[in-house]
Length: 152
Image (cartoon, rainbow, N blue to C red; front, side, top):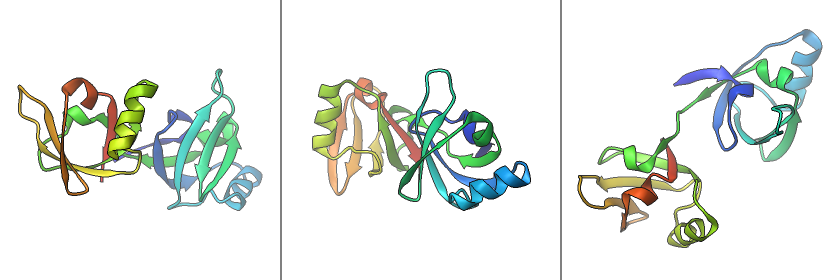
């Protein structure tokens, strides 16, 4: 696992808070807002110039300045395309980086953020075979590259 400041995370990336630093006033204010060690935090969006950023923690949204986010250390699991996953690995879908049509088709099949899938076969040439809730699905490699996952 990789530890880095919350301010360096991109939208849709998530992590677990490891440490909250900062001056006593900022430190206490962040703790009061629920930014405590062990909490899961996800970056929702970042302003065009990088400041402020909106995060989701404990079911609510919070907007932080980049300076405040830099004082929060999070442990993150790196994202990778589904096409890079080895057979037998269990992964969680984090994001689908596709157009509306493809994203809708994948959602209809059950490939939504938060869904756990297992790669059954990824031999070349041919499609990527996944196990999704007991059903086997074949995905083309181009589609599999647009589905971002993280290890469980």
